[in-house]
Image (cartoon, rainbow, N blue to C red):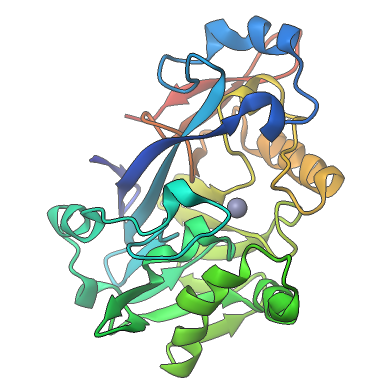
Length: 292
Ligand SMILES: [Zn+2]
């Protein structure tokens, strides 16, 4: 389990699992074999399979601000039916045990914050108890960007929407339990913890900004998925709902945070999962400097 201090905030990464997702060339439609071969020296072992599938980590971040315990993104979850992703269906991981080992029991969480409402960021919002999906974190308010919520709520009637299963078992029960709070894109959760819109991967995706003392960082959700995008920041993914908006917002975010001392906490980088970006001299892309 990786942990660091960011000013007065204690941040812990809680990993649910690592898994190959799909071929790098399928996931990044603009990636060519030559590009990947040129990037290989900059991608550490364990981030690509032998057959060039991208290997992702699925993890949450626990942020203890001194006043609140905030859980950012809740991975895939146990027992969930995911017809379009059989490898992630009916999981039985020890996520809650790992979370407890990080000093965080479910009842300790004050806020759950999902950067967006895809199935692999909302799973532990709920758990199956006596055949019903109930909130995993009994005392938490679940913060969701209103724009994101309304988008997926509208799509619930669409049978081709693969995310409706997640919405049904991991979002709607929070509304029924009256633990969901829909907020605007710039909502402040605590002093130094606030949302910022970064749309494109999904229509209402937000980044969670952090600032404490002189330290700063950003939990970037799925704005960046994989280390190959540090080599080629313009690479959007098939999972992006608007690839050109995603490209614009991703490159702007990386440019703004690079060389600034800011720590980025992406949702899917394998360990070392968080660090800062350093510009390369004379070419595009960034070096990744792990924070721990
Ligand atoms: Zn996503």
